[in-house]
Image 1 (tube, rainbow, N blue to C red):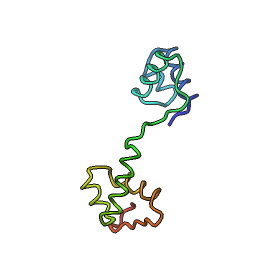
Image 2 (cartoon, rainbow, N blue to C red):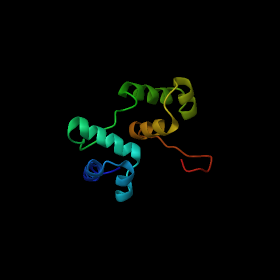
Image 3 (cartoon, helix red, strand yellow):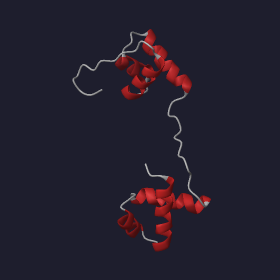
Image 4 (tube, rainbow, N blue to C red):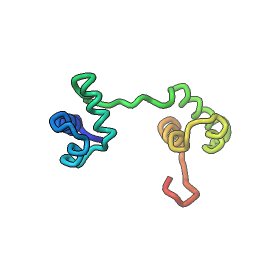
Length: 113
C-alpha cells in the first residue's frame, strides 16, 4: 500500500509531465492502473482519500450463521463451506478463531495452513 504522500507525489508529477510512463519511470511506482485511478479521484474530488476502508464482503448475520452451522453440524470446515455455499476456508478459519474460544485447527496435509 502507498501512503497518502506517495499518491499525491505521483499525481502531481503526472499532472506536471502528463505521461503515465514518465511518471512511473521517475518514481518507480505505481502501476498504470493505480496511477489512473488516483488521477481520476484527484480530478473529481480535488484531493485523495486519506484512508481507504474496504467494505465487508459478508454481513455479521452471514458470519454468525456460518459459525453456528460449523458448531452445530460436526465442526467440519469442508462440510460447512460445501453446504452453506460460502465462504472459503481462510475466511471461515478467521471467523472461528475470533468467535470460538476452544477452536483448534491442525493442518494434516503438511502445508502451511
